[in-house]
Image 1 (spheres, rainbow, N blue to C red):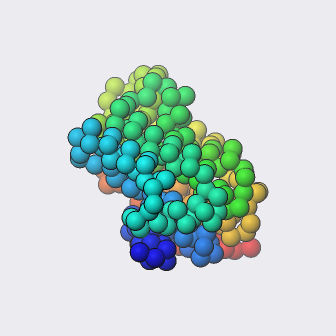
Image 2: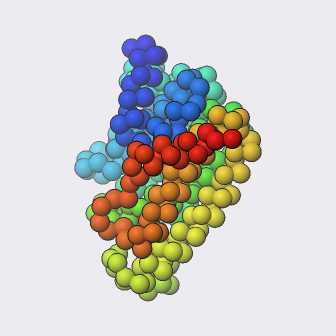
Length: 267
């Protein structure tokens, strides 16, 4: 398989599985767009294993196979594209391995004692994506790339409370559930108060992480700003719905997503 065929495949994966990423990267030059799609496709591969229905031991084995594939001669299109992107942009191995470590953690751990413990997990599964992407954007601001990744993961956690519960996972910190008097994950005044607290923290991380934009060229800044804008809009909808995340999953329509992109294009 040629490199361009591999990039075509990771592009299809991104458009099919990651609508927010797809809308964000559309504003990038072709080479950067392809590299970000390769990183996403790899992260998707890790998530699919960790969230799948295989027995835990087989999940661990599959994840370790993905780790080994980072250094093997690539044949799989995801790894063909990722190898070329790593060579072209200097994407380090460490954040890619951190994604695998996060997948392994999802197999081993289903609850988080406090926010410090949760943040460590978020650094692996989302901050690591920021660290992998930042050299593609042409920046070395790893601190704010990490913070922004954590912010987006915190919004994901709020959006996916019910979906994660069905997988046997509760990411909301246990000490905060207790502090707000939340005895079960269900609509209640206590749950809404907790989620309002979580939303405020996510917005603080988002504002701090967006300082990354100061180190980016215009098109890269527009890409990252679009990601952030889409996640902020999702958080706004969750909040407007009274933090009821137990029904249909909160999603933005295509017109609303395009409106976020359009706002970024305005001078």
